[in-house]
Length: 328
Image (cartoon, rainbow, N blue to C red; front, side, top):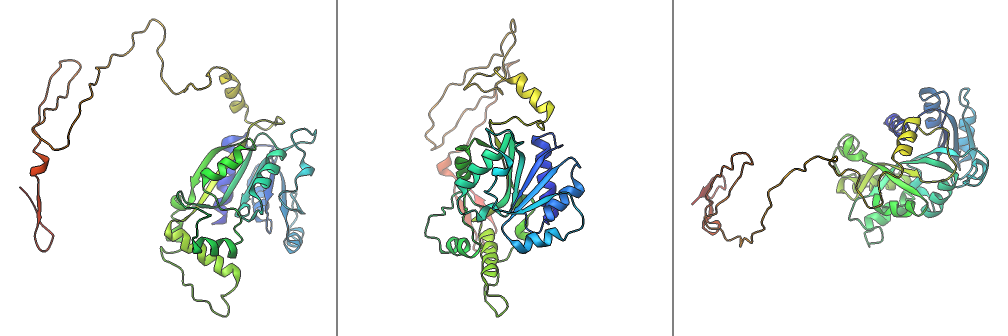
C-alpha cells in the first residue's frame, strides 16, 4: 500500500529530526498524492513542495482540492531555488523519493545536487528497488538488462554501492530496511509466483514488460525493495534538528577518540577488573578419539567429563525407503 510508504517516511523523519517545521521536497511527486497525505496527516508546520517533469501531472495537482503545498514542473535535480551550503536561503530539511530515484539519468549528479540543497543533518529518504547483494548490474544478465530498459531503471545499485556514491557527497547511511522481507511483498503482491510473460494486444507495452520483469527478479531474489535513509554531514545548520538529538551530539563531541569504540565497557578508577581464565589454544585433528572436555565453574572449579565417539566410526545406513536411520 502506498499509504504505508508515507507512514514509513514520516516515521523516519521523526526518528532523525524534530519532526516539526520541516521543509520537505517530494522528488518525483507524481499526481501529488504524497504531498496531499503529508499535508493532511503530518504536522501542520511542514513546508511541502514537489517536483514533476510531467505537465499532465502538474495540471492534475493544480486542480486538486484546496491545498497549501506547491508543485513545480522541474527535474528533481533542479534545486537552486532552495539554496545551498553557501547561500542565505533556508535549505531543505528532507528530500524523499518513492520509486523515482531509480529513473535518474545520473545518480552521482542527483545526489550531489540533493546534498547541496540539504541543511546539515538533513535527510534523503528513498523507497525504491535495489539489487540484491552479489548481483552485478554490469554482468551479462539478460533479465537485468530487460528490466533496466523497460522500467527505465537507470540507477541499479546495492545499498553498499549506492552508499559509496552518497558518501562522496557527505551523505551518511543511517537506515536500511528491507521492505520486501518485512512486508512479505512476494507473497502478498505476487503470490510467490513467476509472472505470465505472454503478451496480448492490451498487455504488450513497455511499462507492462517492466512490471513483469520486476516481479520475476523479486521472486528470483535478484531485486529487493528497500527504505534507505542518508543524512547530510555538514552545511547550513537547520533549526529543525531535534533539540534532544542536538544536545546529545554536543555532549558527546570530543568524548570519543577517533578509532575508539564507544560501546566498549570500561571500569571506573579504584575498581578491580574482572578476571577471566586464560583459554589455551589446542590443535585438533578432527579425526576424533576419546576427548576430555572440562567445563570449569569459577567458584568450585568442578570438572565434568564427556567422551565423544570416534568420528570416523560413525556410519549412517538408510533403508530403501530412506525413512529410517541407524547409527552404529
